[in-house]
Length: 68
View 1 (cartoon, rainbow, N blue to C red):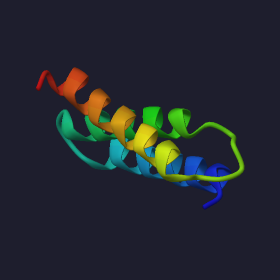
View 2: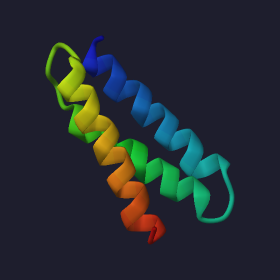
View 3: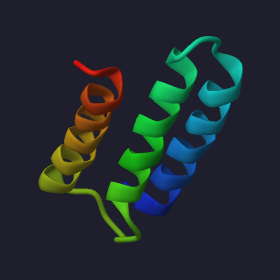
View 4: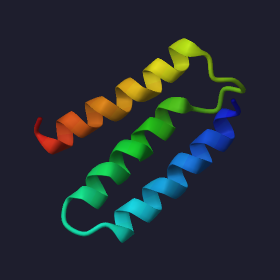
């Protein structure tokens, strides 16, 4: 899987959610997607450990910002 494309897709989702969902959910999901995209970085492939790191970053951001 191309991470540059993944990073772009996560950024597009982040922008849509941040502006399209009311309350605190939009910014929460948006920031989690943004940080997941940053974790993905610019490497040319996505293997199991890289996917795990991206998902872990997403979950950690949700927990941190959502106070879970």
